Image (cartoon, rainbow, N blue to C red):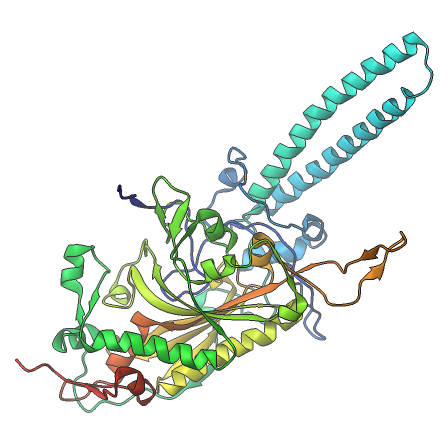
Length: 510
């Protein structure tokens, strides 16, 4: 049996959560959101489906049509053209290098070429109709020649049209999703605090960071992992293993009470699924590990395989919402990550995570976004953490996110807040790429032909994702916040039943 080499892919990416990544440069495709209107703030909501974020892709590269799209998203170019100003402002606010002018020019060319094709088809049909009647030999010969010329011209134009549509799809991948009107405009520093819970614990003794605690309590081994796998890998040992299982099982039990279906997912997926969820698996500085010689990648979040479950499906309205809590291991290259913020467990290449994912009707996605962030806040409050929830600014949104809330918890050993979770509403950005629709349940309309009934038109669902528990960051918080003067660490009460009743991790006897 041969082993496939893992290699890093080609175009910067980020996941919808900033949990272990920098925000991701966009490279997207255009789609269509349902529109909502607010009394004081006009809300333009249209989804832009794409194959990645695009901030770092030059316009010249974006317009290169040499690579034909392997899949196509549902795109409403007319809406983009009619709302050019709003789309342009959104591109600027999200710090994207998207080339809107190129998209609109290609679309106009496509429309004109489509008209030419339709006109030629009509002329060809007219010639065919004329040839059905009685004709003089010379007239028939003339029509045969005319039909032949029309057919050859039509073949050429249709080939040009296919190429133009492919190029349009390719260039359109540079346009990010539209943005909720309440999202603050600017970089990460412009993000606003939505809620703050608790206060920092006051220590009466010199505190340790999680690296020192992990070493003193024989819980984490970075050195051996570095020898075996490389930097940013780790072994968990002793009570830390039990703590990982406790965190996951406790999280699953709590979230399942809210009606979420538990899943474990594949951890290798096709590159096209990664792209359809809004990430670019192959590029410089990518965060995705791709498997050399295949069209497969390691997942960076369970959001990707869960999003693929209902790909190319038409769901019944009565089946919605679909709510999942998925456990998986996650793999991220952390390309470009450096500095004190990346030490220890804070930023690693492989980790366990429980991810919530919701598929719902468009009108319900904002309320589900509030539900997801509330679940996260309730979980972290139950563990006694001091944290704040942020409404992330436009330039910090990943390409699929219409709006994103981040949760940052206080980490005493690091002396700062660190992100432990996020919750994103992607509206129909992903569903237009994945082909996930639902059929409204209203009665069928009677068609013009007797006995024929027209089913109601399908609509694209909205998707949302939120991190319920990312193990490494949670361990940083728990070890550092619950350390005691004698070097031990208290186990938060909700986790004790899931750790066989262990209440305290004590220093090992030497």
